[in-house]
Length: 357
Image (cartoon, rainbow, N blue to C red; front, side, top):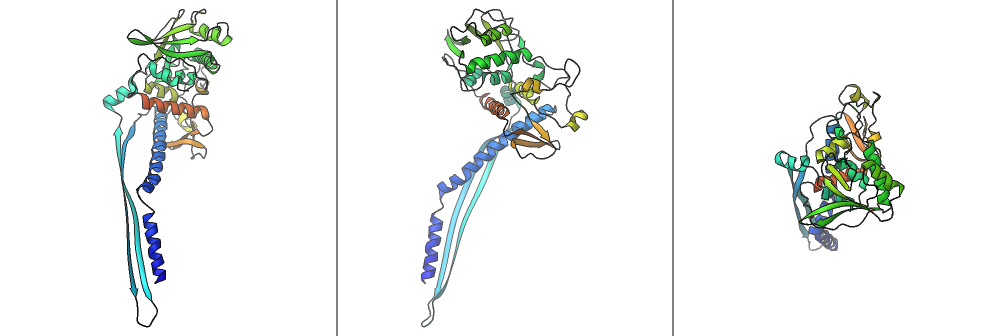
């Protein structure tokens, strides 16, 4: 009987040790990890689709409802003969079951137009830059041009046949990034009347700095100026104290980054992917434009060093786990997807600091 009693106590202790908070600690991290991973896989898949001129498709996880049930039971019997040894039996059950329901929402119709086709707002760009992002990374991904200086506008759609115009734009951004790291430039939003005005301003006393002078020269800005108002638009001629920003839509930004997807040679030779030529009619290397920004590798076998990977068209496409630049841009694109369509412009906010990261 002592043995039976001990088993009863153990079963009761085991049954009482599992309850609601334990179920939460087990299921919540698993849902978090799998939703984050599949979101990344879907985003990478759509970038690969765009490289092949296939139609992208977005299916977001809107809600996960999961019910957890826990039950336990126990039964025992004992036989106590008059002059013999005690005998008995003990049985118990502990059951745990989960019933998840996942709600998906396709991104189509009006939602697609509003989220993917609407140009990104300037205040969103300021928000990202002043949240710690590299100004070079943010503006390379989100802008068509600055003051008429082109940022590969032909690469904002299906892969072009000819090398796009981008070199002066990237050169200007590299100077701006150096100035950001050195904390010599600020990008901010200042109150002006009923609305808000944005400006780029240099720290006083740096007019003769080499990077400052080079940036002003490329954008055709007033070399003696220190504060430059930023306005939306295209085709700015420069030469004054105004900088014109032409922003991309999200789908244009995705097309731009999709040029960094390296297709397998068999697909290139079969004409499934556009082969872009440079000005000398030689194959154009898209890393000339996207170096330090974005690169997706491909192979016929599943990689073992992927931060995120996806299978498509009998090949594997992945971002290397040690490619921190590509991982940063991929994370930036994810944030743009989350912000676009839900971001409310901030009116009258004074953002007056520089970021060095």
